[in-house]
Length: 459
Image 1 (spheres, helix red, strand yellow):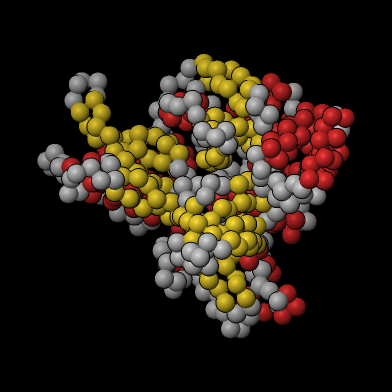
Image 2 (cartoon, helix red, strand yellow):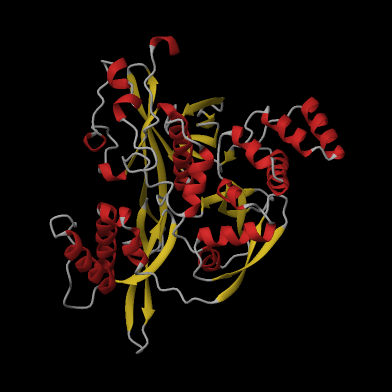
């Protein structure tokens, strides 16, 4: 789970006095707007509950009114405090206490892949799971299939394409999230939440599930996310005209990039620094279409099972506003990066970095793939996992896997991480002890328990 405080605001209280508010974002989502005193009070509460030796140091009080430079310094200190505190990650209820959202009845539009909208009546304080339940009820989607779908925040581009901003998190309030954007270009989209096409059969056994999956497949083909040649296009068109939805999906499953999410063009340092790349996520991999500095195009894939760990980091990028310290007036953009450590060959691990505003979304995709792989390794059922997650007995955010195994599985690390026995030339150091040039605190890493070493036969 990624915490940040990218901006501050000057607000007016009930008595007319002004104060500085700090906007706390969780996984790129504006979660709450709080005062320094509220965070200090929460800090004291956590200290009483867990002991002062467990909780990180809190930014000190100031006697006099803060200057703009001091406000910026406090913002940075508070952000580091929250990022350093595992208590916030594993005890989300502490942060939830800060959120003060009035509860009112409201109507919320949810988009389907075919462009249709479903309007549900909800409460403004309803969380993602509540809204998803309301959508399922409106569509008559059976309860045991609800967990196969998720809600995504998307941005409709000028050319009609869609940018997937993020998957709505469990703790998120969809109505507040979409309203705070104040733009008709953003929508909430219903889309399948799993990656293995083998689970399509569960969904297609139901008429509503079949229609949703069919609409998604058609939309992905139309937007060019799925690779289709002329002969396949003719076959698909014929099946559409006949109304053969299952056959259409079965043919779609044989096509390249079926079920992938395609991200906006961004920058990577692989194979060379500053390369333009289009990243797609699916089939337990990140697919790269890279444009080299020589204008040569290359395609390659990075398998999830060979990513030892990954992390998302953010940094402030000043926007020039004519002042000596641009960030002092909150005139900064947030730069997001996804970096993963990849097993390039049997004795070589290498970091690959993607600079993209969709880095958090990419991380969530990776974690979802790992979850599915771990269920398979344990001989478990994806259906049970999705049901448990949806029912609330599986309370772990999709990007919260901070070097901890999925609570449903608790696998034996020695059985899953095979590098320690296969590769004597690669040091399997602890995540927090990484000596990579990109090293940061171990709490920022997502350890991959689906990571596997490769043997000579695999090379």
